[in-house]
Length: 251
Image 1: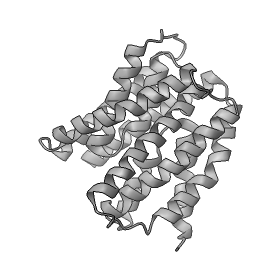
Image 2 (image 1 turned 90 degrees about the vertical axis):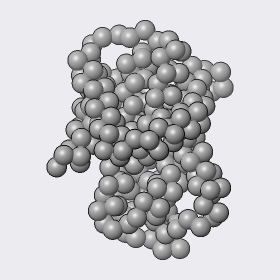
Image 3 (image 1 turned 180 degrees about the vertical axis):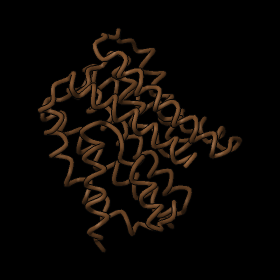
Image 4 (image 1 turned 120 degrees about the vertical axis):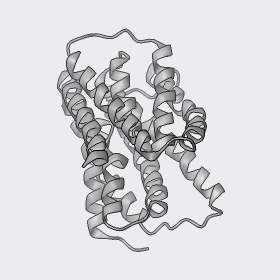
């Protein structure tokens, strides 16, 4: 088992952002690893595995720190379950769409959508939204569709979308950790089935270690932030990730 120090540091920083804001791990880490010369079949399965482990760990710690309540039957548990359940259907639909749409338009769609949600959050910082299960189900389908069609765009949509659907900021971040962890579990299993166990896992140990080390610090950060400040930061981060996605297309 080989550990790469730079990759550990990179995973640590990206996962810290992801577990404290509910977004940014795959969206930032994947293009960085591609620039470093790794190919997608090395990167994607390793990222999914590290997000599976770190996401479930973050969800457990968010629960322990009382940022969210995942006791069976609670609203937070039900929302996360709906999000994870939608991932299967949304991903299947996304595969069929991706086969008939160019990569440029897929990335353009994701970039505009994420950027738009960031703008919406910043424009409605002081507004209270009414929670409905219809909004949450639609959000779960949309986010999993994004994940299936592009490999990214899950965290920004799920976290910002929950806030716009009436979920409190801290709860939204904790719910995203659990939902994305479960979604990545589906992804890892799918890779194992359809690649006949021929995946290169060389990056996985370093990514998993770096991600896991950052989780407790990120969860503690969420606990200390006030809800309104966290909502502002999530809005700005979502907007920046949208611009980052669009920038990669045209620059």
